[in-house]
Length: 177
Image (cartoon, rainbow, N blue to C red):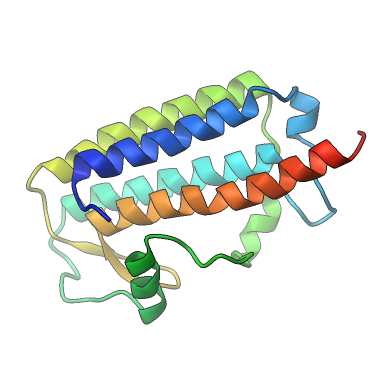
């Protein structure tokens, strides 16, 4: 697994493009169909990815402009994820606020937000190419991450939700709405 910022940026933007492309076959109604009462629709997964990735990119920017918490470390669970370059292959229970993830306002707006997110990821990734600060910020459950670790974590998070997308798409193919 590469630490090269160019490769990290390319892999991440390819994942965003795959999400955008994955929305194309569906009309807005299908994008908002939830496979279960407590599950998310494709649209809600995208909204979650947009919101969380923007937070992660904010952490990257903070780390590159700071020298704080440099001696802090990530948790063992986070270190294992980074070693695998992926989240565990299981359904993860997120924080309680995930229950309030909204449906998107429309398909075009959702694709537009994903496209803007891609540009933000590219711009933020460019900071990794410069010799910025070496600060770290705290992840709520996984310890402290540096700028490059936050960027890698954001990419892993994006890819993790591909599994959820596959489950939702299987549901959409198997049922009539």
